[in-house]
Each structure stands twice: as structure tokens, then as C-alpha cells.
Amino acid sequence: MTDETNVILYELDGAVARVTLNRPSKRNALNSELIAALKNALGEADSSERARVIVIAGAGKDFCSGADLSSLKTIREGSIAENASDARDLMELLTLIRSLSLPVIAAVHGRALAGGCGLASACDIVLANANANFGYPEVKIGFVPAMVMAILRRNISEKRAFELITRGAEIAAEEAKAFGLVNQVFPDETFAEEVTAYARGFEALSKSAVSLTKTLLYQMDGMPFGEALETGVDVNVIARKTEDCQQGVARFLKK
Picture 1: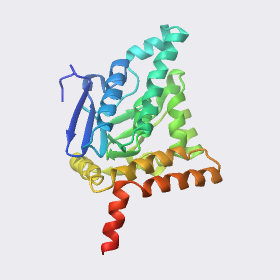
Picture 2: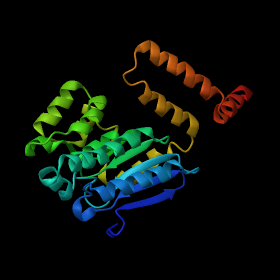
Picture 3: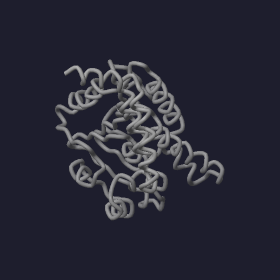
């Protein structure tokens, strides 16, 4: 995957929609073109009748190194309006991932830094190879990992989050797993196969049930306990009337 004429590569492999950041010479750094293409690919995958899960990966040596130089120039030279527009591009991407009906897996190899770490953390599941590194180095240039902090704070404890975002250090995959940033760490030599096998685990599951579960989980965030339970009642009733649930219950009762 070295042809960078397409900044995003999209492939539907059975029920697995593979979305690859394709700027390997730039360590898949985020710019407006890449973010726009990524949004489009995610939307296409989510609307596919065949797809059951989305896997985001990076071409080349790294998953994503964060902001492109063009974005850094905007920080330094752009107007307030230009900086706001640039920041909103990333915000909309992070919001989109959570709003998709399909589960989204980040398959992280190499480095996932700054906005790249935020992109991985925004995914529903993070799988990493043993040599992956994660970090938020923004403070080293006087910047703040502002939007990605909203994701980070929901992934890990307050003290772990404070440590990561104020010290700007990189942490290895196993440490990131201990922090709660990573779900599974796989060996380098079998990483691609392990990711595929993990993703295909969603093929046997109800698409509607997974979608409703994802929506409810994030919808409950910040709700008072009673309101969360009431919302759960509503989703419970909706789930009971889906075709998948009706057929699943029928199969169970025949046993």
C-alpha cells in the first residue's frame, strides 16, 4: 500500500469493511483531505448491507502520527475562524465514529500519537500489535489535546488521563492495555491474522442487536441512573420487536 493517490483505501472483505489511512510517507498524518475521505469511507461502510464491522488501519510503519504540517501551519498562521474550522474537522470525525451503527475497530501498529491516538481511542475497540506506541505529545509544543481529551477521559481513569496528557510521553501497547486504552495486544508476526479473526467474530452476531447496544452504551453516558434505566426499557422493547430477536427467540424455544 504505497500508492498515495488515494489517501483512503476501502475494501469490503465479506462482513469486514477495511478502511486504511494511506499516507505512509507522512506517517498517515491527518489533514483535511484525509479526514474528509475517512468520513466518506466510514459512511459507505456503515450503509453497507453486508458489513458487520469496520476496521481502521494505517498503511506503512505507523497507524497515525497526528496532525499534518498543514494543520500545524494553520495553528501558527491561521485566523481564529480558520483554526476553528480546522478543529471542527477532527471533532466531526470523532463524533461520527460514535454515531455509526457498526462497531469500529482500530488496528494499531507502530505509532498512534496526538490526533492519531485520539482517532484510535474514539473507536469502539482498539487492537494493537506488540510494538505499538500511544501518546499525546501536544504539550511539548505548547498545544492542548483538547477534543481528544473528551474521548480519553471516557476511556481511562482521571489520574491516568492527567498523566498522559500533561507529560506527553509515549507508552507501549501492554502499558496502554493496562491503562484501559487498548482491548487486546497481539504478536507482531500474526497481527493481521488476529485482527481479521477478531473482526469476523461479529459476523455471527445480530447486526441490529450490536447496533442498538452501541447506541445505548454511548447514549447512557452522563445520564442519571433512573434516566439510563428508562432509556434501557425503551431499547429493550425495540430490540424485542426486531427480526433478529424474533428469530433468535424462536430458535431458542425449539431447543
